[in-house]
Image (cartoon, rainbow, N blue to C red; front, top):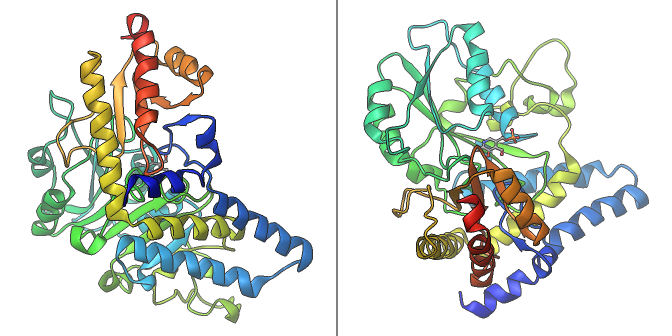
Length: 382
Ligand SMILES: Cc1ncc(COP(=O)(O)O)c(C=O)c1O
C-alpha cells in the first residue's frame, strides 16, 4: 500500500482531523462507515421496529468476519458480550477436580484474565503466576518452570496492556502442548493491529474484543475454540442463545450447540454487531499483514525518536517483542497525560507508564507531534 492510500483511509476517521489520536489500545478512532452502520440500526428501530431476521444475521456476519480475521472457521467463534464473558464461559466448562487443576497465567495479564481464574479457586483450580525477570520481560524459561504435568491451561496475554511487551506465544504453546496443557491467548491488545493466525500459532482458545484495533464498539467480544475441543467442553455459564436450537424454547434440558456458539449466552448485542461488522470489514479490506507492517514502521519510528530525545521506551525494542503499544516511564504520569490531552494529543497511562498505541491510520506527523510535546515536557516529567 502506498502513502496516498493511507491518506485516504485516514480521512475516514474524522477525529484524526483535529486530534493526534494515539489511543487505539484503549478505544479506536471512529470510522465514518462504523458511524453509518450504527445509524442504520437506529433507522431500523425507527422504521421497522424489531427487525430480528436481519439482526440475527448481523451477529452471524460478525462471527464470519471474526473467523476470517483469525484464520479460523466460523463454527469455532463465539460472539460474546466482552472478552471477560468469553473467558468466564470457557472457565465454566473446565473441570478442576482432577489432578490437572493448575492454571498458569503471567505477570503481564490484564486484570480480568487473572481475576476470573482466581475465581475458579472455589472450584478447585490452582493459579500460578509466571514472574517477570530483572529486565522486566518474561522469558520462556520462566514459563518452563511453571508449566508442568498438573497444568490444565496456560492463559496468557499476547501483548501486555501495562508495558507493550509481546510474549513468545509460539514458544509458550510448544512448551504447554508438550506437557499436555491447553493454551488460551488473550489477544485483545494485538488483534486488528497484527496478524493473528490461530492455526499457525496453534493456540486452543483465543479471546478479545471489538472496541480497540478491530474498529468496532464496546459491548462485544469473541472466543475462539479449536474445533476438536468444542464437543468435550460444556459451559455451565450458558443461556438460550448457546443452545443447539435457539427456537426450541425447551425448558426441560440444556442442549448446547455443537459449535463454539455453546460459549454464548443471551440476546446478541445487536447495535454493537452493526458497528463491529463495519469495523471488521475495514480491517479485512486493508489486510492484517499490511496493517502489521505499518504499525511496526510507526512504533519503530517512535522508539527511534524517543532515543534521540533521550527518553527511551520501556517497551522492548526487538522485533517480535512488542506490538502496537510503546510506553515510556514518566514522573507524575497523570499530570503529563493531562497536559498532552490539553494539546489534543490523546494517549493513556497505566502505572507510571505513558502509553502511545498505533494503528494503520496514524502517520509520521502523529509521531512528530507527540515527540515535540514530550521534548517540551521532558525537564519536568522524565
Ligand atoms: C489484554 C486485555 N484483556 C482483556 C481486556 C478486558 O476486556 P473486556 O472488558 O471485554 O472483558 C482488556 C481491556 O482493555 C485488555 O486490554
